[in-house]
Length: 191
Image (tube, rainbow, N blue to C red):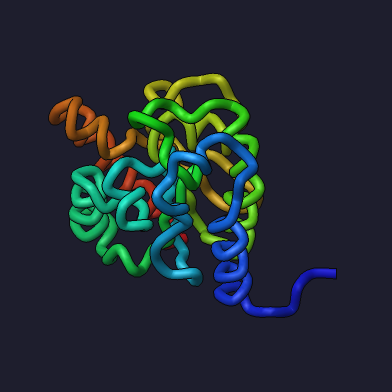
């Protein structure tokens, strides 16, 4: 039997549970768990890789340079503010030195992400970068080959795209592709 409490309440309880998680080694080095940000009723959900240094300090995903770019692109390409979408990560604690998350760390956090997707129930999920895209699409194919189209995911649309950090490092071509993918997500939301 499913929990009859509303999704925002269940998300708050899940965030509280995650705040005390010690299922992997990342817990030992975190300042705080970075659970999510945004509206629990959003039609659009973003899934990134994991928190960076600024996110670990503030407890909010995508608050550094990548987050500022994402915020700008949300307004310019999708026509919404940050608070109108839901933003989460594959892992909820910062990997040391911003290294890639390890398989055991991803496995430990996966139930949190899966429940976030279920509770928010967005029409469209945009995965930002390799780790989120590979995890949700259950593939070994990299983001460069995955992006540029949409995929079905648990009764909704999934749009893989580059991580905003890649756009900051990769120049105008990566940024143009990121913009195009966000427009694709916007069109899918309109359906």
